[in-house]
Length: 210
Ligand code: GTP
Ligand code: MG
Image 1 (cartoon, protein in one colour):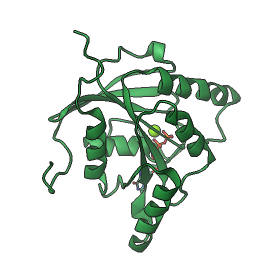
Image 2: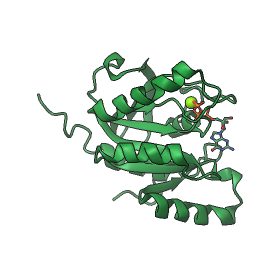
Image 3: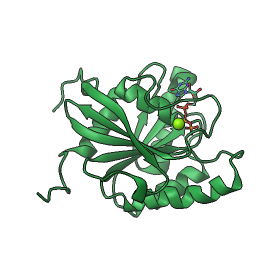
């Protein structure tokens, strides 16, 4: 049991590890890995930075569609080491046709073939909820049988009284673990860390072959 004052594990180090457009380009999968996916501009990079407490780790931007590759970050915490995968956002109309065509195979290959993946964190804007693309991704992920964590981002943009109903609705729609989150205020950080740690724990499970 964690104390109720748990704010997330102490972060010892967080560093950019590698990026690629296919699993074959990514470094060996030894550590437990957590993927972060969602529409362009939903707040994936901001959330990663807030989780590790490093403002400039994952690049954030006001113009959507900047992250075109899978970016991996190596995170060392007092509760163990892991890798975070920041996936390129989808639903960005101004992307080139080539990019749109390559997005599907890239993400699908990664989600299915990356053995070290322990959980998918699917981010949705709390004001928009789950949209078609999100739903398709969640369905695709379901075939892995691994946990799905849905994060409702930008809850600081909703009046307080609207937050709980929005989260309840998401819970009904997805039957997943739902965490409300704000990269601005840090709200939801501890709860998301708990969900992440419970899927990466024990850190070596499944990869112990000597
Ligand atoms: P792509 O990599 O382009 O797919 O975007 P992303 O999902 O990584 O989004 P990013 O973190 O770059 O954030 C997009 C915009 O939303 C930026 O202007 C952020 O400052 C803003 N933003 C992200 N999270 C929050 C939040 O919790 N609250 C508020 N108010 N703004 C946020
Ligand atoms: Mg990003």
